[in-house]
Structures are given as structure tokens and as C-alpha cells.
Image (cartoon, rainbow, N blue to C red; front, side, top):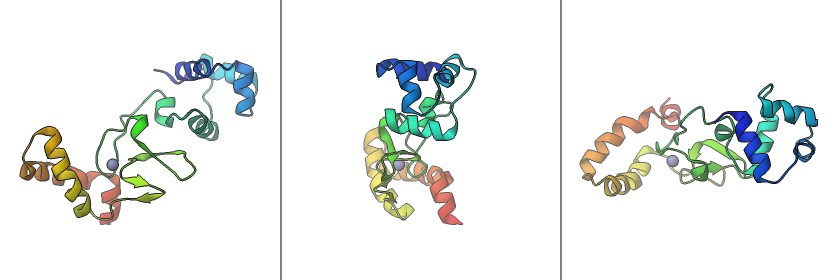
Length: 150
Ligand SMILES: [Zn+2]
């Protein structure tokens, strides 16, 4: 879905007119109209406010240009799984199980593996040894572990 369509749907879903939408985000009605015709896209600050106000990730607002995955455990991120900052805005890098209360839950790859290996092995009906090999080949490529390894 394109950003303009996402924005129109959101506004209608919340029963707002273009004027009301404009007031909410401190822009002119014309700006809202331009977003909705695709002439313009809200700037980053406004995207953040819309994200927070309507509880929708910026990735989804932008028409889901990328499949987000948690940069700690590798889980695909739907909006409902994305972690939050303490002010409740989205942190689109991590799932809500890996990032909680403004902090990373897993401080070491070993700790994450301890949890993830049995969990994933059960979910995909694989034995834990195979699962461990798969995860050990994938997880270190994720941003969180790459940065930790430096
Ligand atoms: Zn995660």
C-alpha cells in the first residue's frame, strides 16, 4: 500500500476530516490534502507524531517498504510485536521481547540462545542441535550482535 492510501485509511478509520487531521498534527488542510494525493509525504517529525498518535509503525505508514526483523532475535516484526520506547513510541529495530522498558533484554548471545534454541526447536519441530547451528549462523549477522562484537 502506498503512503497516501495508508494515510487516507487511517484518517477515515479514526473518523477525522482533513481539517481535524490537520489540526491534530499542526499543519494546514492543504498539507493533508497533498499527503493524500501523493503530492507530498509528511516529514520525519510528523511521521513520528502520526505513528505515536495512531499506534502504527513508521514502516507501515510508509507502505511497508521493508520487512522488518528484530535485530536481536531475527523475528519478523508485525506492528503488534514491535518494541516501544518508554514514551510508547515504536523502536522499529527490535521485538517487544528483546527490548523492554528502554533496555535490551539479552546482554549476551548465549543468554538469547538459551531461551531461543528450545523455543524455536519446538516451534519448527527440529532438534535443538540443528536449531542451534541455524541460529548461530544467522544471529551474529543482526545489527545488535554485529555492534556488540566490535
Ligand atoms: Zn527479538
